[in-house]
Image (cartoon, rainbow, N blue to C red):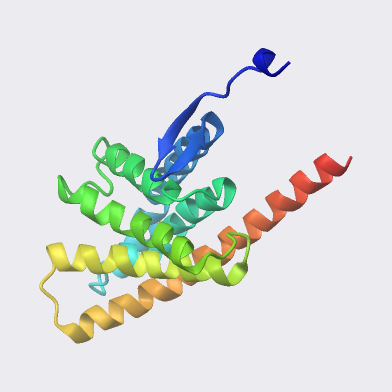
Length: 193
């Protein structure tokens, strides 16, 4: 009866085979990332602006949790980069986070870093340590790419902003790991019951 089974629609994510569910996850988490950015960035900018600290360095951890969570749900290489690419296209339509063509560099750097981290570490996205590390490194990559493209800063300032970005990314990664853990527990309970 193999011929009666309905084939699943699929597309390609990076180098992995993806499904329609993966596409929904990518669209959902990209939208949540842009929505989070449009809410949090103006609030954080009131504090970071007068201190001449890039807003993304402080608030970026809250947007980096979404690609990490997306990877955690799909467990497929290329998911975080796809989420970042969709976010880059979204940001071209709204005034917050729009850097023209440089938007793609600034948004894709964290996605590449998250996918690369999980590919090289071969760790599970539900691990708190891996989520925290991936989000921290991604936020540092996004902050440094922004600073390199738009700000002429000395190395000491770049290191300082990178440290702030890493701390913020750790917080976002921790939130992502908790959310993934809770989602995994709920799915396990549904399958068991």
